[in-house]
Image 1: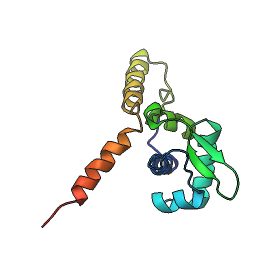
Image 2: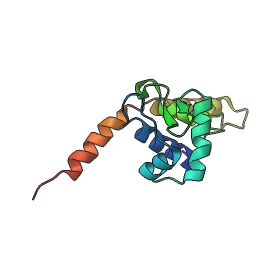
Image 3: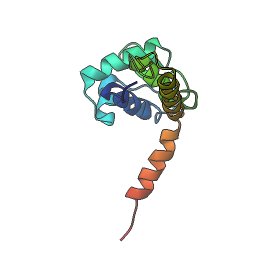
Image 4: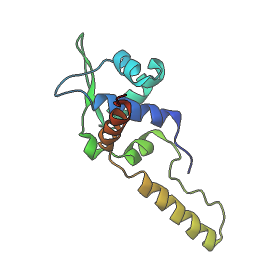
Amino acid sequence: MTGISTKTIYAVAALHELGSIQGDEVLKIKEIAARASVPQNFLEQILLELRKQGILASVKGARGGYRLAKNLKDVTLKDIVMILETDALSDVCKTDNPALKLFWEDIREGVSNVFDVPLCELKNYQQKANQTLNYSI
């Protein structure tokens, strides 16, 4: 069990941007990278993996790009972590002590539950950020 990597942070940023587009619109990798402030070459690998796992769809051609294949209410942070993190939520107890095994299992389950938040929640955070930024003097 480890922390969240930069890869997952960039994936959530990209999904946030893709969640803001309408209908059948698509965004090119270059646009996603610029909007999400992430390195384009690293983002390419992430988007490819998310496409392979059915989170994203890609459209080929001059007007091609990426769009969500699933609604963000159907995608959790845990889904993204499980796709991108090789040892996320893995068994960290390397001992035969039954008390320690139970302890670490409870911790792992607790962390897993924390990550079980749908990414549609990003819209709520965007609204909070907009309210914070929209103040008058």
